Length: 287
Length: 304
Image (cartoon, each protein chain N blue to C red):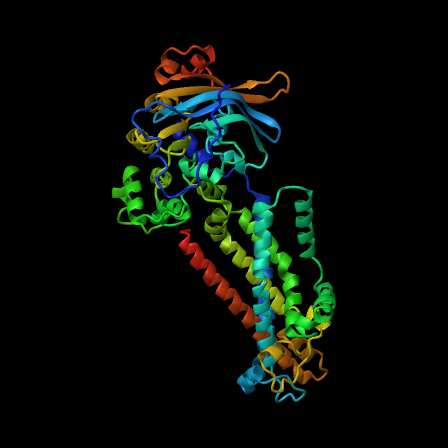
């Protein structure tokens, strides 16, 4: 890439919905993220190398691959959650709407307000349901009517009817599936542009998983979603595009490192993949 | 034998008697019993020793200053001193908690941080009399202008320094035990580091921090040796000093009262020592009670 755009900085959150500017119908499929030669190391050991991938606006992109292939690591570069691991170093670049996320001028806090995250294990705060959803708007200094934000977020997450009569009860008393939908509501409440989901259903039963998948389908017109999943059927069901990662033994160091093998339309990945390794994985012969 | 019968027999048959398990269980029961009995003996000894005085002039004992007259001697100065010391120690808790937050959340993991952690751990094991010498040098002599010399401020600050490492260690443990999921959740929603600490880490760590701080108040309330070195008096005359002058004047504390009574040769003073011990125990229990209630309240709010 020789014609990199100049590096505008992400403005600090102003309480204005983050996504109004980018959401023009004229560019429905523009790219949200583009990484070039992204590599991440933990304590000097390379976890994933040379990932170049572009994530399109308002599509669901799935990352699949065997354990330890670095798909979660890549996901965590998109909102700079890797910053929280002191030993992690990131090389290469991640462009978000033309902004280099790892530019020193970029504030990771502002990044995470636009790029929300849902984690593998449902992690509601030990607070009431209401306070969980209101947490993001509160720390962001949102002056808008919190009741309204909480209600609309819970409605979007398909949780409102189940919890509207017990908003002040502790969130830790909910079922796992409800907790995960609460975490999605919590992420939505700050009005992000992107939702990163790191194996959001791995701790849930099939029915709760189905509800999360329905929910993803319902909100995909408003958010760009990137989901890491171990479940190939899930990737096939929900995603528009799929990236297959794998872990290879590095002959030089003897360590396993993740690589992006193939990235294409989900239909292509599952029916007519180019790479033999992808085919072996999606047909269940490997991994 | 039918297959189901075989399975039944296998399940019902105790494989072998688990001797070492039973022995270990027995040892645990013995340990609990011994610990409980020791407390019971101490408590009953203290209560029995104070019974006479309790019946005779309990209120008078609680409300009069110490005296060489057995019929008049009391612990009011000691109670007041111990309470003021507790307040001074409690006022320094933010320093200990702040140090723990820094060490756990901000400090880089390098040799300096590890050196500080090791140093704090070692300081927690330094004998209290050594802290007394430190208090004498720093708070009584160097900072005489502030403390007024051998005063309750000097004594309280000495004990605060004594328990500071305990506060730092227990707070750091509590902070470290906060699930990473809370931090991730907060950071993922765009909270800053300080917002994450204030809204997630500290509330979740608060029960543990509270336990540590209360234990250290109890520790400070029971120390006599450092106060002796700093220059606590067996008793003193107040005159008409105002509150501030009293803070900077002569002082005593309950452990000082106990030591004084216990060292007097006449057997008849034993009751005074026992009663003063009882007062100290009740005081410490009350402080613990406040912490237990506070802890339960926070835990309920956290929904656990």
